[in-house]
Length: 92
Image (cartoon, rainbow, N blue to C red; front, top):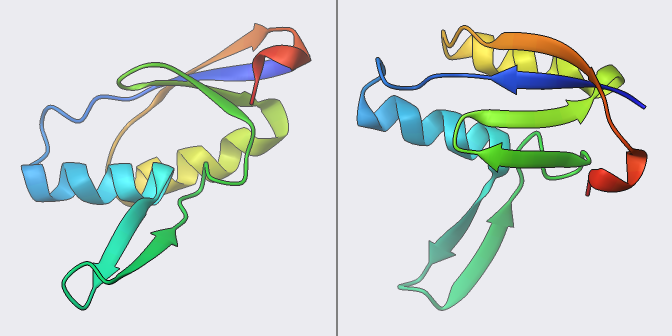
């Protein structure tokens, strides 16, 4: 299966913007009323099959790569994208 290897670097961003990028990609858990209620807020990768190799490296299907790249570019992060071929069972 054709896939994309996306590498991005958040080192030049301030901590606040790093958190925003990670929340936009992976989602987060939101608390209200001092932790009485928990809400799962989804990110762009919550509904997409993906593989996170290490921090800053993601593999997604070829057709889903534009969504991830556009989120990164909206936060002024310049990703490096490579075409790869993997087994479809590797993504979850």
